[in-house]
Amino acid sequence: MNELLEAIKTQKRPANPYLKEQLETRGLISGEYRFLAKRLYDEGLKVEARMVSELAKGLEQADVRTKGQEKFDKYQVKQSLEPASLNLG
Image 1: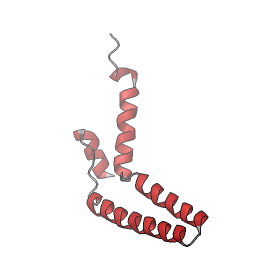
Image 2: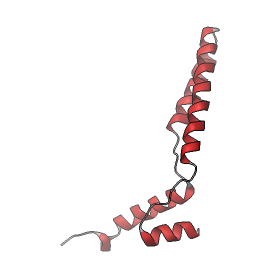
Image 3: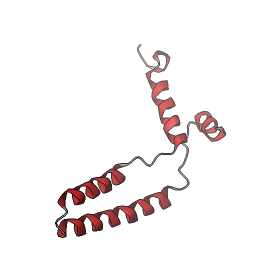
Image 4: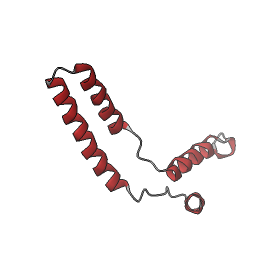
């Protein structure tokens, strides 16, 4: 919570300290899912292959933001929508 308050004060988005590891792991798992889907398809298990392929796609498209980043982004959007922050005149 302190990290979020500090980020709001300084107007700097909090960093994801595990982003590199998260993306590397995601890539490895996604590759394994794709390999598994291909093997299932080759074995004639097309429905199962499609399900595993969709799982891999969902993993690749998943958000990588931390909860702190999500809250900071939500706060920033809220601030930009308030009438006092708009230049109307």
